[in-house]
Image (cartoon, rainbow, N blue to C red):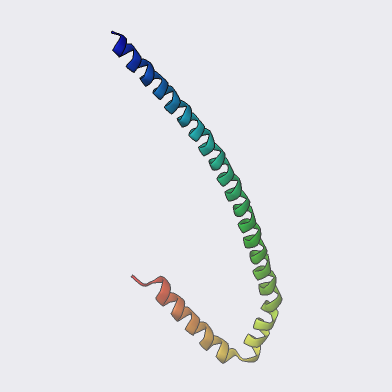
Length: 98
């Protein structure tokens, strides 16, 4: 019987050591996951700021150039019609492609 008790104590000690190691690794994994989440949220915030700045820049550029495009259309109506037909044909080919 003494043999079985020694083996069971060794196994118990080995299992306790493995459990402690697993708990340590789990704690480390939690810290790494928290660090990754923080980094991801910061990166997403920067991406949102960049996208918002680009959106506002395009809006400003568009509103600044609407008058010049309208004036060009009034000065050269035939060319404006041909350009709009070409753009419409290209967009139609892109969106109606099956």
